Image 1: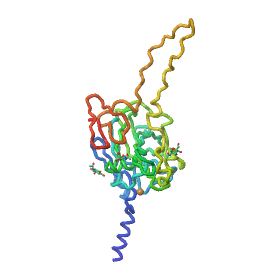
Image 2: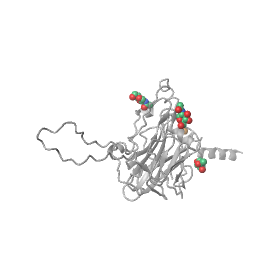
Image 3: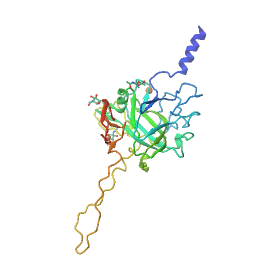
Image 4: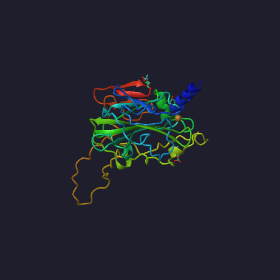
Length: 320
Ligand SMILES: *[C@@H]1O[C@H](CO)[C@@H](O)[C@H](O)[C@H]1NC(C)=O
Ligand SMILES: *[C@@H]1O[C@H](CO)[C@@H](O)[C@H](O)[C@H]1NC(C)=O
Ligand SMILES: *[C@@H]1O[C@H](CO)[C@@H](O)[C@H](O)[C@H]1NC(C)=O
Ligand SMILES: [Cu+2]
């Protein structure tokens, strides 16, 4: 029996000790299913659009060198890339049910130089945040969080590739941060995309960050103790990381208002009509398959001509 017992011990040592942790196990893009990287299998022969990662354990230091994609940043030997049209939703699936319901959900993109992300280390990239969900309602101590919404959505998170991002090779980084204990726990995984049919809105300098670099151990959103009396009445939560893509360029400087009459005798300036208020990236119409509604969603809600915003569930409505 000794051999059997030690085999058992070996087997359990090789498996994740408990599903108290985990990561992104698969993706779905426009109805197509993509198996993720299997961190507890041999890397030999694995083909996936997901970047390799090697542990279900959380990262607990915001300056950890593995924070970009939960590994050393490299692509796999047989790395795949999914082609995705801008405006298409992409869903990441975690091990289900995901165990941690307190904390924010975040999704980032980073464009790779050249024509492919394969061979590009994720630590060298500049990331911008395309989606986030923090404290949805209630208090920090007793509220409903993005993480809880992820669990309620079959332990998955759907985000739409903005129609405005330039076409090209990208990594997408889905991250869930758990705040049920301190230090905060980071669970980030990445996948390779080739975005087609994109726009021309480059992220601003303020919107671009590196991993590590984007977070600090002193960020209020990472140091908050959710079990204090103060947390039980606190209704604000600051999601860590940079401002959302599109948000820091949506407030175009308004043309100066004409407040005073021109000085006597001065000719009236011949001005062309003030440009119409331009719609920002965050507003406007949603393309086919894009999200247009659902609890916790705050983006644009009108669909492009010919499409109807259709509720798929309480949390997700799509332009179809
Ligand atoms: C918070 O939102 C969730 C999901 O939308 C809902 O089930 C819950 O009743 C809300 N709670 C409060 C206090 O509004
Ligand atoms: C829930 O997620 C699993 C993957 O974790 C998937 O196989 C299943 O189809 C999903 N169920 C629904 C109803 O979407
Ligand atoms: C809530 O706001 C207060 C006052 O601005 C701030 O000190 C605190 O860090 C915020 N809490 C969180 C969790 O972001
Ligand atoms: Cu865990």
